[in-house]
Image (cartoon, rainbow, N blue to C red):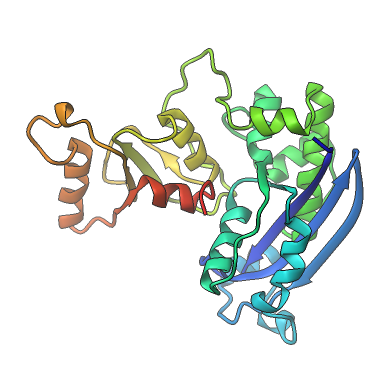
Length: 287
């Protein structure tokens, strides 16, 4: 496999991941940054103050900027048939949701999450501290956080340092990033969410058999920002329901976690119940 990859980052106007207001793309080949491209985007929607506080972009900055449908061809032709790098699943999910919002065709590419790379390349970040800002500070990568092009470039630089630290190249990391952090050891389900994840503030619980392993699902959820809990409780906001083993349901049509969630919902607790496909979509693993 060529050592060429394209790093991408988006900033959004509000909590809707399709509300893209800035894109940055950095192309790397054979260990060098060879091309950059960036654009402001008019999301045709409101700017939430909390998002503006992070990236500094507001309504006045996107006056005259292209809308997503007007700029999407510029984005997709840079990604087509490439390895596309982003830090966490946020950017992959934002792109997928924006494409779906405007009924556009998905891009054909392979995705590599540098948060997953970091957690496997450096032991100190296997379970916490793998946000882009912290990792770049520790690795000596200077960048202006939450500027889309700067974030994209930084993610690419992190990947290059992972190549050097591990002696593994792009093809090997495409495989390793999909594997458990330590296949030889048991990883508990419960874990804290990534502070920079799009779903930070949510608490998620899994029930039933999933296509991915339960540990891998927990990793995906935590990378997306969710706190992962072993059981439904008063702080739960998301329940992912996989296939149920009838022999384990003790005559019920739903698991105990599912029933407990529905009981809490009936009492006013806001819990969203998701199928596995919905979960994989929001964490960016499926389009």
